[in-house]
Length: 187
Image (cartoon, rainbow, N blue to C red; front, side, top):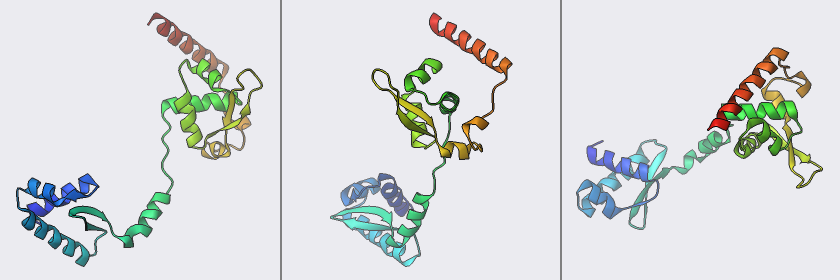
């Protein structure tokens, strides 16, 4: 592959959408006819070689796309489960929900000291947390709890099997939280 073809390939791949012939020619500093000839040669080679991509012409513009024969494989990869990453914030929020369920967002935020909308929504998206109903109180806030997926992911049969922190750990956590609150009050 010569440099001009490499440039065309890079432009079409990066742009994603169709790119007018004039723009490709301008990038190559060539005339439209010469540029079109190079692109059509590339199109033929892509078809002859057993490749997963091709270049198509759309009303005087060109676009790189996947060959139809490859759609089955794209569907397979798209159906594979996506890896879910639990950040410290998500783990902290999930822990609060697991140990205090059923619990409202307001109660979670009171414990964490910050807004928890994003974290709770992400945990719902990951199907680790679900809405359990509404609290019979003014505003009828949603109640959240863990799901069966949560139990599977953490290898427990019920929330009763969650490890219980030792009393000295609880005291240490309380002390850390108080220190953090003092720091926040000073700021």
